[in-house]
Length: 82
Length: 82
Image (cartoon, rainbow over all chains, first blue to last red; front, side):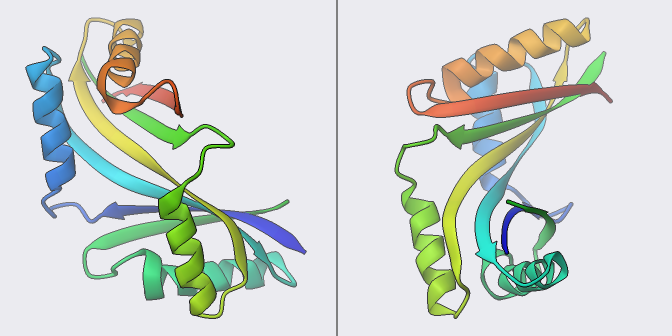
Protein backbone atom coordinates (compact mmCIF):
# COMPACT_ATOMS: atom_id res chain seq x y z
CA UNK A 1 0.00 0.00 0.00
CA UNK A 2 1.08 3.53 -0.64
CA UNK A 3 0.94 6.26 1.97
CA UNK A 4 1.59 9.98 1.99
CA UNK A 5 3.39 11.36 5.02
CA UNK A 6 3.66 14.93 6.18
CA UNK A 7 6.62 15.57 8.45
CA UNK A 8 7.03 18.92 10.16
CA UNK A 9 10.45 19.66 11.62
CA UNK A 10 10.91 22.70 13.83
CA UNK A 11 13.51 24.02 16.23
CA UNK A 12 12.90 23.28 19.89
CA UNK A 13 11.73 26.34 21.86
CA UNK A 14 14.70 28.33 23.11
CA UNK A 15 16.96 27.51 20.16
CA UNK A 16 17.95 30.61 18.21
CA UNK A 17 16.38 30.68 14.73
CA UNK A 18 18.62 32.82 12.51
CA UNK A 19 16.38 32.42 9.45
CA UNK A 20 13.32 33.48 11.42
CA UNK A 21 15.23 36.45 12.83
CA UNK A 22 16.29 37.54 9.32
CA UNK A 23 12.71 37.28 8.05
CA UNK A 24 11.47 39.26 11.09
CA UNK A 25 13.95 42.05 10.36
CA UNK A 26 13.02 42.11 6.66
CA UNK A 27 9.31 42.35 7.57
CA UNK A 28 10.05 45.10 10.10
CA UNK A 29 11.99 46.99 7.41
CA UNK A 30 8.92 46.74 5.17
CA UNK A 31 6.89 48.36 7.96
CA UNK A 32 5.18 45.30 9.49
CA UNK A 33 5.24 45.13 13.27
CA UNK A 34 5.84 41.42 13.71
CA UNK A 35 7.62 39.46 16.39
CA UNK A 36 8.81 35.93 17.20
CA UNK A 37 9.20 34.75 13.63
CA UNK A 38 10.17 31.07 13.48
CA UNK A 39 10.72 28.94 10.41
CA UNK A 40 10.09 25.23 10.15
CA UNK A 41 10.14 22.71 7.32
CA UNK A 42 7.51 20.36 6.06
CA UNK A 43 8.50 17.26 4.10
CA UNK A 44 5.84 15.50 2.06
CA UNK A 45 6.93 11.94 1.35
CA UNK A 46 5.22 9.10 -0.49
CA UNK A 47 6.12 5.66 0.82
CA UNK A 48 5.17 2.05 0.22
CA UNK A 49 4.49 0.04 3.36
CA UNK A 50 2.36 -2.92 4.41
CA UNK A 51 0.37 -1.04 7.04
CA UNK A 52 -0.05 2.56 8.18
CA UNK A 53 1.74 1.66 11.41
CA UNK A 54 4.74 0.38 9.47
CA UNK A 55 4.74 3.60 7.43
CA UNK A 56 4.69 5.68 10.65
CA UNK A 57 7.54 3.63 12.10
CA UNK A 58 9.64 4.09 8.96
CA UNK A 59 8.99 7.84 8.91
CA UNK A 60 9.94 8.13 12.56
CA UNK A 61 13.21 6.34 11.78
CA UNK A 62 13.86 8.67 8.79
CA UNK A 63 13.33 11.67 11.07
CA UNK A 64 15.84 10.42 13.59
CA UNK A 65 18.38 9.41 10.93
CA UNK A 66 18.09 12.27 8.44
CA UNK A 67 15.23 14.75 8.53
CA UNK A 68 15.58 16.06 12.06
CA UNK A 69 18.30 16.53 14.62
CA UNK A 70 16.81 15.28 17.89
CA UNK A 71 19.12 17.53 19.91
CA UNK A 72 17.69 20.74 18.49
CA UNK A 73 14.56 19.78 16.55
CA UNK A 74 11.05 18.62 17.32
CA UNK A 75 9.17 16.72 14.65
CA UNK A 76 5.63 15.56 13.99
CA UNK A 77 4.63 12.85 11.53
CA UNK A 78 1.17 12.45 9.98
CA UNK A 79 0.50 9.54 7.64
CA UNK A 80 -2.52 8.85 5.49
CA UNK A 81 -3.32 6.28 2.80
CA UNK A 82 -2.97 7.53 -0.77
CA UNK B 1 -4.74 42.59 19.88
CA UNK B 2 -2.02 40.07 19.26
CA UNK B 3 -2.39 37.22 16.80
CA UNK B 4 -0.26 34.25 15.83
CA UNK B 5 -0.14 33.39 12.15
CA UNK B 6 1.01 30.20 10.52
CA UNK B 7 2.01 30.63 6.89
CA UNK B 8 2.84 27.59 4.78
CA UNK B 9 4.66 28.28 1.51
CA UNK B 10 5.11 25.48 -1.01
CA UNK B 11 6.10 25.13 -4.64
CA UNK B 12 3.24 24.93 -7.11
CA UNK B 13 2.73 21.41 -8.52
CA UNK B 14 4.93 20.84 -11.55
CA UNK B 15 7.79 23.03 -10.32
CA UNK B 16 10.98 21.07 -9.79
CA UNK B 17 11.94 20.83 -6.12
CA UNK B 18 15.72 20.32 -5.93
CA UNK B 19 15.76 20.13 -2.14
CA UNK B 20 13.02 17.49 -2.13
CA UNK B 21 14.89 15.54 -4.80
CA UNK B 22 18.09 15.62 -2.76
CA UNK B 23 16.26 14.41 0.35
CA UNK B 24 14.58 11.66 -1.68
CA UNK B 25 17.97 10.44 -2.95
CA UNK B 26 19.47 10.54 0.53
CA UNK B 27 16.53 8.51 1.89
CA UNK B 28 16.83 6.04 -0.99
CA UNK B 29 20.56 5.68 -0.22
CA UNK B 30 19.64 4.86 3.38
CA UNK B 31 17.39 2.07 2.04
CA UNK B 32 13.97 3.74 2.26
CA UNK B 33 11.77 3.34 -0.79
CA UNK B 34 10.23 6.79 -0.90
CA UNK B 35 9.01 8.91 -3.80
CA UNK B 36 7.75 12.41 -4.58
CA UNK B 37 9.53 14.17 -1.74
CA UNK B 38 8.60 17.87 -1.60
CA UNK B 39 9.77 20.45 0.90
CA UNK B 40 7.80 23.46 2.05
CA UNK B 41 8.31 26.12 4.68
CA UNK B 42 6.17 27.20 7.56
CA UNK B 43 6.57 30.67 9.06
CA UNK B 44 5.12 31.32 12.50
CA UNK B 45 4.65 35.05 12.98
CA UNK B 46 3.23 37.05 15.89
CA UNK B 47 1.54 40.27 14.85
CA UNK B 48 -0.41 43.12 16.45
CA UNK B 49 -3.59 44.10 14.62
CA UNK B 50 -6.99 45.56 15.46
CA UNK B 51 -9.00 42.59 14.19
CA UNK B 52 -8.31 39.07 12.94
CA UNK B 53 -9.34 40.19 9.45
CA UNK B 54 -6.77 42.97 9.49
CA UNK B 55 -4.14 40.45 10.63
CA UNK B 56 -5.09 38.10 7.75
CA UNK B 57 -4.88 40.97 5.26
CA UNK B 58 -1.44 42.00 6.51
CA UNK B 59 -0.17 38.43 6.35
CA UNK B 60 -1.46 38.03 2.83
CA UNK B 61 0.40 41.19 1.86
CA UNK B 62 3.60 39.92 3.51
CA UNK B 63 3.30 36.68 1.54
CA UNK B 64 3.00 38.52 -1.74
CA UNK B 65 5.80 40.97 -0.90
CA UNK B 66 8.33 38.74 0.83
CA UNK B 67 7.47 35.26 2.02
CA UNK B 68 6.28 33.70 -1.24
CA UNK B 69 6.89 34.14 -4.93
CA UNK B 70 3.41 34.04 -6.49
CA UNK B 71 4.85 32.80 -9.80
CA UNK B 72 6.15 29.57 -8.34
CA UNK B 73 4.70 29.28 -4.84
CA UNK B 74 1.34 28.58 -3.26
CA UNK B 75 0.72 29.80 0.26
CA UNK B 76 -1.83 29.31 3.02
CA UNK B 77 -2.34 31.62 5.98
CA UNK B 78 -3.99 30.64 9.27
CA UNK B 79 -4.42 33.26 11.98
CA UNK B 80 -5.57 32.84 15.56
CA UNK B 81 -5.75 35.15 18.56
CA UNK B 82 -2.91 34.77 21.05
